[in-house]
Length: 161
Image (cartoon, rainbow, N blue to C red; front, top):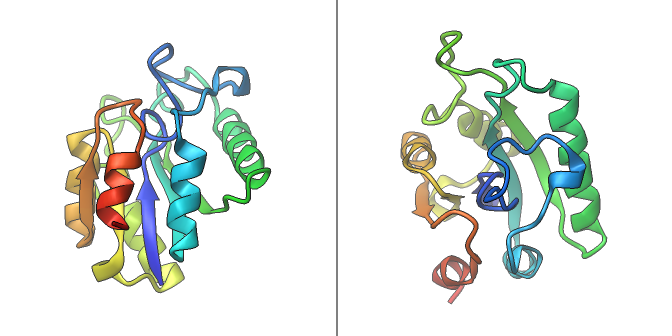
């Protein structure tokens, strides 16, 4: 199976107005995200979201808030035929605790690769920070860096010309 791993904030969800997105009313999708994910899905890529959610550790919001946002994203995408296979997140923040799952660690990606029998050679991670790319490299997949809150069309065209 081939996969696309996506960072959430800045890649799927526009976070130019709010650094921490933990309320469904604050979810604004990056322009073109549904069309781009649909294009990838049509080429048989499975879609996964891998996100750091350090605001949980900072007590700015709760796990339930993150899960509500993920349910909202999943349901909005479903309306357009886009399926996110699984959402995973790290609730930790390095200022408060030692953590092995927060990107740039590749642990969450590695677990998804093992669980879903993903072919690393045919898979990519799309992220908007160096941490994302470091996590991809650690997992042995190709990381593609994009500017935050930008349309993914140029990157998707690199994956599926």
